[in-house]
Image 1 (cartoon, helix red, strand yellow):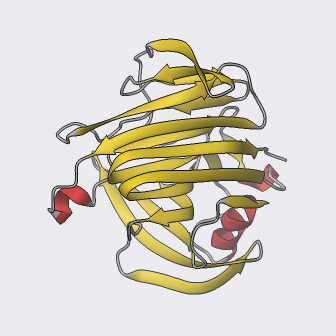
Image 2: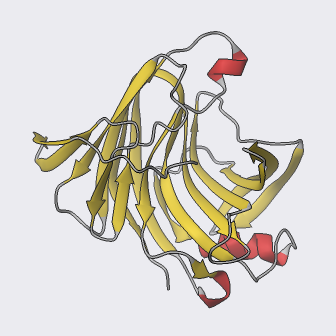
Length: 248
C-alpha cells in the first residue's frame, strides 16, 4: 500500500468510550504512538464516493489499539468495486532491516468488524527490497480476514494447504505495476475464515517464501504494516482492541 506523504494531519482530541482518542480524517493523516505510526491512508480515494476517519489512542503504546470508520459506495461495476480505496493501518518504525538478521517477528492482533455490505480485508502488509535504500520489489500480505468475498491480487498462481503457525493458508501470487515499477505480490489467505485473535510469528511467512526460492536471503524488510483494505460498504467500523509486533 502507498502511504508516504508530506502532508500533516488535522487532529482533534475526544473521548471514544473510555479511551482518550484522536480523530484523524485527512487523506494521509497520521498519529505517532510509541514505536508505531497510525495512518488513515486514503491512498486510492480520488474518483470514488466515500470517506474514512481513524481514531488513534492518545497514549497507549504497546500493545496499541485503534479504530476506523468508513463508507465507500458500491457501484455494481467490478472495475470500481474491486479497487481498494483506503488502508487504515499501523506502521512499525525502525526499518529497514536485513532479513538475515531477523530471528522472529512475534505479533498479536485482536480485531472486529461491523457495518453493512462490508467488502474488505484485514491484513499484514510487508514490503521488501534488495537494498536498504532501494525501491521495494516484493510485497507480502497475510490476510487474517476477508469479508464480502474479496480476493487478493493474483495472476492465476495459487498454492493451497500451506501450514504455517498452526493455520492452513492459500498462497496467491500477483504482480503490480505502479509508475513503471513492478512489484511481486505474495498473499497468504487463511482458509479457516476470519482470524479475529491472531497470534504468530510473521517471520515464518518471510522464511517460507525465501526457502521456496521466491526471493533470496539478501533482502531488506522496508515496511511492516497491519490494517484493513476497504473496497466498499456502509457504516463500516473496524476496531483493533490489541495489536503488538516486535523484531527480534
